[in-house]
Figure (cartoon, rainbow, N blue to C red):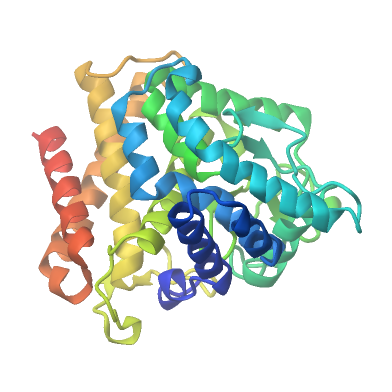
Length: 365
């Protein structure tokens, strides 16, 4: 977790390059002249590019048509994106031929069809190495009290991650869609000295984290894997962060020229202020949290009301506790964001705020 100014302000040149390339691709209707532009993109930009497409308005609209459990029902979406995926594959394959010959880290697919595969990070490919390096550079010293690293998941944790996605899909396919459209990799993190530690030894580390600078990737500590209930919520929580990151970069959520240094600050009174995780948030970080808590409020509220099916994997006591927890935090954040909306909201940010506030109000009644 880093300071608020770094959340949206540090939208890297990789994302800007990827969006420019995507705009060129769409304007040229996937013409052959686009291939050279893709070949010039750095590997990290290609990773961004693969996950930018689904949140563009013209593609996102296809998700709104239906959430059929049969992925073939989304054939129009997949066909529209297929050529883009092929171009990226061709470019990275050519780039990888001089190296280890394998770019994509898709050995362990947890859910989703190409090109929307959500995978467990297991290393051994160029894409996996990019993620490891980006985590080391951007996040390793800001997610816990000690430096952290990526750790390959064992079969038990891979099974839990897969089960968490299945649970989300069984409740409502829209939940799983939000994950696979915005998250390519689920990763396990631990202290750098994890080999010398026992699994039960305490770690002062974020339960789940993500960063604007590491595209389509969410990171989970051992605490997230302590129960399937915690992991299921954590996966959905981080997927919502990635979705909002994508929306901020492809839509006018924050007002043009938003000045992070001048933004009002929100005191996250429920969080302990630490050297690695401040509980004083700028407007953008408050919006990230509100976006998540409203979704959780609606999810658990709909399950309690019977609007969504229950599941034996999430106990009634868990659902009730998390509903109350989410409702309280959403109320605090919503009131603050509404009061300061002129300071941060762009045109689409005001629309998003209205949608979230209305959804929260419906289930708080």
